[in-house]
Length: 559
Image (cartoon, rainbow, N blue to C red; front, side, top):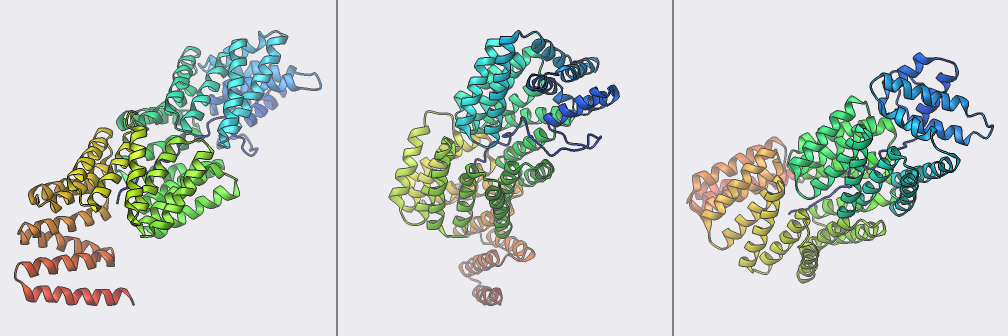
């Protein structure tokens, strides 16, 4: 059974993250606001060494700190802005001495504003921060409204540093809703602005957002290379929030390419950072992603525990926009446990949730998974109608993963209605999508599906070849449950071809592995497979012994 999960992009929350006030020492994790206040305090006491240490500790914050200090000066109701502006000047000078001239350019731009421009800049700052906070809360419509207004004001007064950031976040908002054409336009503009201003750090974040578009369009190698480049820069700047988000994004690509253990390692690092930062959205998404990985390995209890943890984060932090992602994950788990009708209801909840936030791609995903649940529940025609509708909607757009899942659904429908020629066409199209986008697990799944259709058509050699190809891919990615399932299918195909010795070898290897992992279900299947092989090979006594062993195993599994 094949499913697709497209988690929300990892890079959701770059920006004005407000963290608890901490003592600014070498191990501190400060928000930009806390950093600005610490710099102001050091400057007021004339402690330039403290300013130097803060800037060297968090150099990526320096331009924002300069802007925030100027805003403090503007908002000072006592009319004593001097210390703030002096701290901004000192921060800019210290950063320039350390080789970063961007804070000084930000400082020069703001100090050159006349009264009218300064008032416009203050309004733009208010709107910009409101937009970032709305984006953090996944309130995309509110974020777009605020950011669009801020962008207009920044353009009018020529504040290019904040303009680059606002345009980048506007692209991120579109990206998180699956509006790739709109996102690409904003991100290309933001990247150009940031390149012109010398804002290398935030340009790295913008490029990471663009990498997410590459990821969805199936260009996984390019996406992974871009993420790793961004990660190296973020690590060099000790940008913990960005590191966590980029690790999550890298894990998404690794999962798609079949490197599940590597993906879980990246997610574990990401989860630890999110926990340190107190990032509830990141924690919830990471828990869902790690639950998905556990589910892939048949660790269903572990998966459900991860989903329960994610649900607590969502409920306790009022993160309703993430509910759809969790509904989809739990629906897939229920399908793997055989409860297809309940899964279909979960997908309906996910569709409603994702529509409410305007996430078109997640709506398509939930719709296709609902079609698969209905197919398994016996509502074949309805399932095919849904899949054909989705395929028609996306056929002219470069969405290979959605196209693949729709074709797989139609292939399974055709198998159930015994239209084997149509099944071959559908699975071949799905295989083409999987290979084009580098989705190793999906490629293996579709090779296996084609092999089983060929087996039904009596093309034994083609069936064996396809199963061997699928088995090699599953082994390469270390996907043990899929390896065992494929080996049993291969044993069955070899039995039908009369190659009893090799068939028995595949089934026995499966049995031994299942025994090692205490996998009762796979042991039962392997024993039955060996009994069938022995029976057809004329080894009736051995076959009977296997069946008696199967009875004993079933009895033992109930104790």
